[in-house]
Length: 183
Ligand SMILES: Cc1cc2nc3c(=O)[nH]c(=O)nc-3n(C[C@H](O)[C@H](O)[C@H](O)COP(=O)(O)O)c2cc1C
Image 1: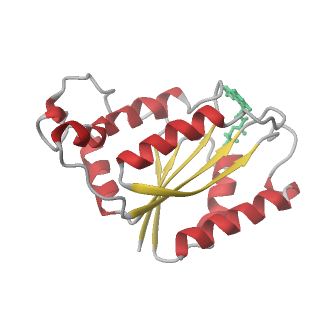
Image 2: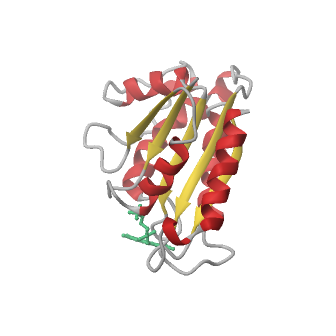
Image 3: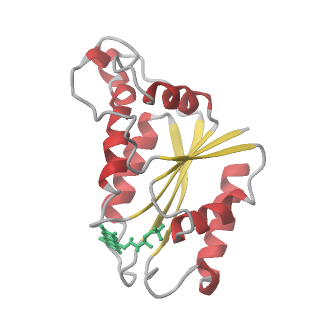
């Protein structure tokens, strides 16, 4: 079982990483946390539309290796802080390169959703009902394009004041997410 976690936080000991590590400790198999913040080795999508007719991206950069990792993974997760109520911009620039998977709908070779997916999102502002709404929707569409069924979204607002150590409710949700990914 291979799990790939796309990490959008620049802070190696930040809240997003803390939640991610808590989850990883509860997952079996091979797990890779892949940093996607400010990747200078990955160009943004140019909308050249090569992928409308080919099941590949024509841009030869570090993304090619990530495509292989995504295709081999059984479970795909996105872990990120929200910046202005969405994914950090530099992470989103990398994720726009997933257009090649969306384009399967145009090519007519969209696969079945056989992978499991999930997400971990953190926000510094006090928790509010809409805090993660837009980001969750964006990630759900991405997971769908990756043929992954989203089995859980764990969110933690209020990180400017409290961390995971003060949030037994978030720990419980991470444990539930691990269970959903495992079974
Ligand atoms: C540029 C920027 C924008 C942010 N925008 C939001 C926001 O819209 N909503 C929110 O709840 N927190 C926002 N935050 C706070 C972060 O989500 C919060 O500090 C989070 O814990 C950072 O994740 P990390 O600890 O993994 O680095 C923002 C932080 C930065 C740096």
